[in-house]
Image 1: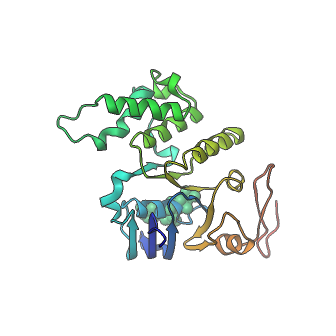
Image 2: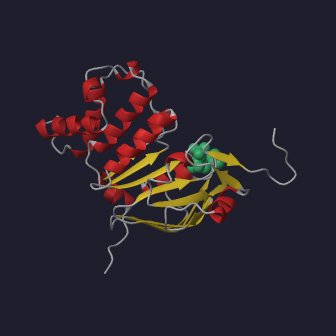
Image 3: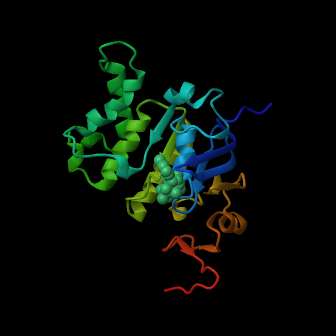
Length: 258
Ligand SMILES: Nc1ncnc2c1ncn2[C@@H]1O[C@H](COP(=O)(O)OP(=O)(O)OP(=O)(O)O)[C@@H](O)[C@H]1O
């Protein structure tokens, strides 16, 4: 018998500010998947992640994560929010920021980090290649280094599922490629779900891709089909692999390209 899905979203609809943002979304992630959700701006990608994390409650449908509700299973999820949501002006070191990802695991009060927590932080920083930056203030790092620290902070809780919102958005193409390779390296230990605009970094790495634009278009393979893209983007989209630009939006009817 096959295992239950790690993430099981059924018939989910979400309305925000009086507007439908997700409509009747069915979406399943299996153990060991490296699953990417792509789609246009405002298509509901971040909202879907927040529903899976239990941060937004759907108006219809059900969400199961690792056999429980999202809130029951949140301690088993590592979440990397969009880079722009972080405030790097706080005077903390990279090591302290990464270590703070262990707080949810500490049961004793007052909360104090133990040896195990510090060892987990060292491992997470080593995985993301920032072990040598542990003592530096987070605000003094480059955007790419900060992004690595954010991911290390999500890894430090040793999650079963790692959920990332646009992990490559502020990094250059070679760094984005390198990030994706790092994430692929995590697949033996955890299931990975990410949303991205950066279609170019995906194709050879992910196991499955879905397109989301209020409704979801899935194919259960790593293939991006024309139907998925046309369905999600509402217009033809051409992909240019192995080069720049990664994605070119086709012309809408009656519209001319500048
Ligand atoms: N708290 C909120 N209140 C009202 N509307 C919201 C709220 N959060 C998101 N929305 C709206 O829901 C829609 C989907 O937003 P969401 O952030 O999920 O899209 P996205 O696909 O992640 O977009 P992007 O690629 O631009 O990050 C947008 O139209 C957004 O304005």
